[in-house]
Image 1: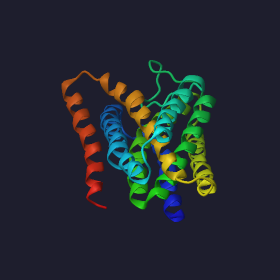
Image 2: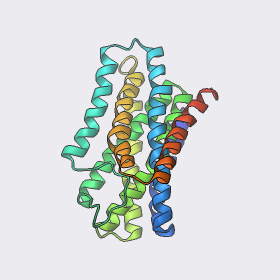
Image 3: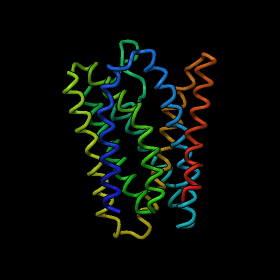
Image 4: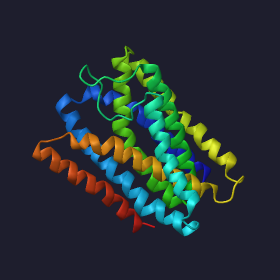
Length: 246
């Protein structure tokens, strides 16, 4: 189990290096890629919540006040991250027309976000390997556009490409600390991992509903909007597919 957690977090951390792709792929192709990835990410996050995690929580414990409050806490925490730490969970490259907060705040916020990712991955594997795999996949598809956006913030803030890649990767390593935190506390409270995943549901719902879907609504071209819809459905579809892979 610990090996699975380590490999999953390492894979997610390496996604932080994908920001360099924004300099390899031309702007038009990058925009089309992000349309697909953001839509797919929203579908996969919501699909993982409602198709895998919530049914597993209900199976493990009675769905009462505690998991309900933790789902709300997950939503609240990401709201606090964006509202008071001034870090926007953004998936649009930074530009003069789309500015971001100062670089330091972005790195702090991204580090906290990655810490939570580590908690989520560890907690999901503690439930079972299947939930761990599907949750890791949902996080990976979400991290690709996210890390491209974060890389753009650092470049826009004056970092060189090498420095931006280094600090982006460094902030991603806080995921290991999050996983360690969960592994240390896993035996301290009954159903700890299940409650962590209830918190995860809230975070995923917030990211998909507050950050991703509003970005998709900004697109008005019919062809791109249809691509978004297909990608969104495919994101949910892959989570349905994994049901039959158990």
